[in-house]
Length: 252
Picture 1 (cartoon, one colour):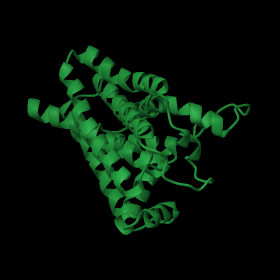
Picture 2: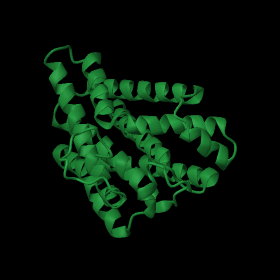
Picture 3: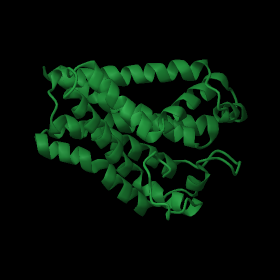
Picture 4: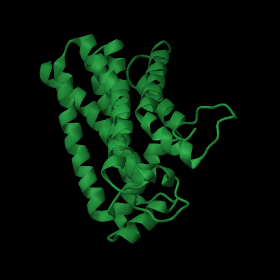
């Protein structure tokens, strides 16, 4: 209900407590969103040449199913940190619903990199289970990375009406372990399917980017916001795609 546009039973209550408990399943949402993206790509290859259009429609599907939730967070972070020089100013700008210059340029470039990374990956490697697992891994691992930020930093906002306020209660080590299982399983499945253990090395650039983002958010905000989590998800998703493309290029 919170992370996607997918319909849920009316009996499910949207409460702060339920939202806090649902954080542990954030990487599992990546399975769903990634699976929908893969399904849309496969369906479009039946109707169009397997070049640009299937990739574009796949991206549209993932944006629609999440309501551009994380893309919006990334754009807000670009605007906030691009135009603000104090914690208060950054938080004020990020809360503004209007899209500024930094957000427009940042989001446009991010989507362009994502599109061409996917296009490069599918140009070198034909579509199959390996590609599907790579796509789903990017979505699950990026959401796992965002979940670890909740564990590493306190919540930065003090206002009670913030959308992500319920998850400010944090996440326990046990919950993070469960989230890690959901986040890592698609990558482990990829390693088993391809018998290429080198894919596990992709966790290194992911960890480095995560460390830098945690340091950056901690320095300027003293914590994280919902927009910071969305930006983390988007940035690390692209990093994973680039890692796959880099490996394919080096091995050709």
